[in-house]
Structure formats: C-alpha cells, structure tokens
Length: 136
Image 1 (cartoon, one colour):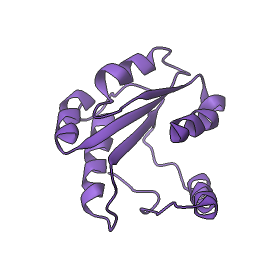
Image 2 (tube, one colour):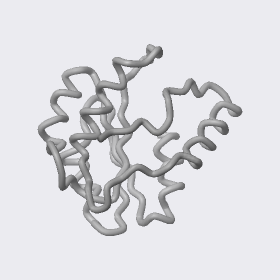
Image 3 (cartoon, one colour):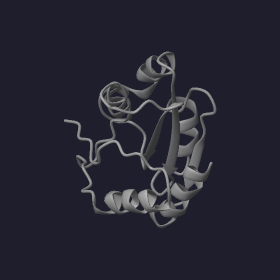
Image 4 (cartoon, helix red, strand yellow):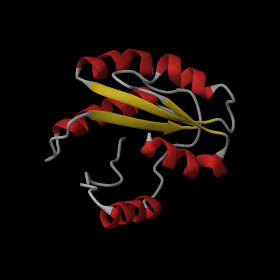
C-alpha cells in the first residue's frame, strides 16, 4: 500500500517553505519494518505527476533511504520507464547501515538529466544532507 503523506504544495517563498517544512516534520512515517521497496515507490511517484494541478519545468523524484531495495520491483526495472517519461531521479543515501549505499543508488536508482546522489553519514546527518540536496 502506498501513501502520499503530504499533498502537492507550491513552495515559492520563505513562509511557504517554512510551512512545508513544518508539515514534513509533523507527517507520520509510513513504513513496513525491514521493507525497502524503492522500485515500488518510484512507480507510485510517477503516477503522482499525472494526478496533480501543477505544471513544473522539470519532473524530479528525490528518493531518500537507508537501505537497498529488498521488496517488490527492483529500481533497475522501473528506472528506464521514468527516464523515458522525462523524470529525473535523485537520491539521498543514509549510510548508517549500508556504508556503500551511495554506490548502490548511483548504479541502480538515480537517472535522468542532472541526476545525483547526496550522502548522509548517519541519521544525525540527515537534516544537513536534505539541506545540501535541496540547495543542489
């Protein structure tokens, strides 16, 4: 089962960014313990581009995680579909449990124009990594 924790939001100034950040902080964490279904999340995300009222200049999925895919369709199966649809997939790898996860993301998850992987050394570094990723 997939869940969109926060509705599409137009972030356009400091106030809307702060309000969106607050929503993220308050959002519940939806997960099945031990399950990392990156391909499934990417497939679900593609559908969200079609079902919203926004028309952006780019279509980008920012995938964050602390483990390689271990459930559902593998990202290497889904990634070409997204790239063909004009979607860029960026990654943020939390290296806490898998020290080479950033390499996994580079090889099997990210793709599309200007795609990249940001690294968080551990969960404590996650907030800083998100900030670096957003600036990038």
